[in-house]
Image (tube, rainbow over all chains, first blue to last red; front, side, top):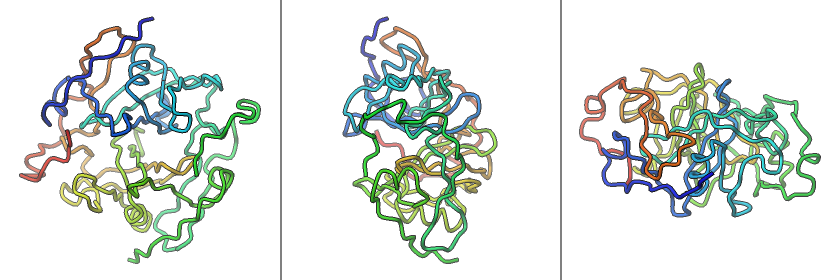
Amino acid sequence: MSHEAIAFAPRASVEQVEESTDFAPKFDERGLITAVTTDATSGELLMQGYMNAEALAQTIRTGEAHYYSRSRKTLWRKGATSGLTQEVKELLIDDDQDCIWLRVDVAGGASCHVGYRSCFYRSIPLRTKAQQIALNFTDTEKVFDPRDVYGDAPNPTVL
Amino acid sequence: MSHEAIAFAPRASVEQVEESTDFAPKFDERGLITAVTTDATSGELLMQGYMNAEALAQTIRTGEAHYYSRSRKTLWRKGATSGLTQEVKELLIDDDQDCIWLRVDVAGGASCHVGYRSCFYRSIPLRTKAQQIALNFTDTEKVFDPRDVYGDAPNPTVL
């Protein structure tokens, strides 16, 4: 399978970026673009990550989700360690082309390194006047035990 | 309505951030946290934006989506100009607490300043070997004409 670099279009005008078929993604000063991943069937938000140009190209070439790991500073084929790969059913880009939306099927049914289906397993109460706010767990059942899957690998969460 | 500041918990440990009910969001060096907004009914991804601490607090206090506008450098009550407000049905946070998910109902049915329902109205072809890639419009019908809604206001898209 060829992974040749993709020739992104130069960003020439607002009209071109918003209204044309030119593929002109905007990478930030770190060389990254925001990626948002939802379950193609349920619509559930699974995770939010980042891609560099290589991760974006690999995702397009292979149809498997690739990201850039900021904690490990490297290209990251999702599921390389855990087996929880993501098959991309549809890939979209937003109006100003600084965000990628992946609609995926997840092997194993989980996307979160903590063990939950989705990374978004806690909700924030709304319309409260409280100063101190406690989160609510919306999902309490882990799909897997992270110790079994990742062993002693460092946790990617940065404080 | 009171908009008192919220006392976010200090980020003390990975376990606390991932596994507890402590609300300890991580704002980046710009003071911003990523926000992802989906349609509460259809699950469609509508937009991706940013919040500062004030926008997050206002969203929690009022149940109406507030963001931080990077182009205008100001708190942004979504729909203040366009009338396309977003009523938040559910607000969630991810494992490492650096991303907020808003599940919303949109007044007027559109979220995108270009006039489409969603900001994600173009798809990227998958499993192609092409070097130059053309986007496909997945939505071709605008809900509104941006000139009618925004008049001469500057376009927020930055090249």
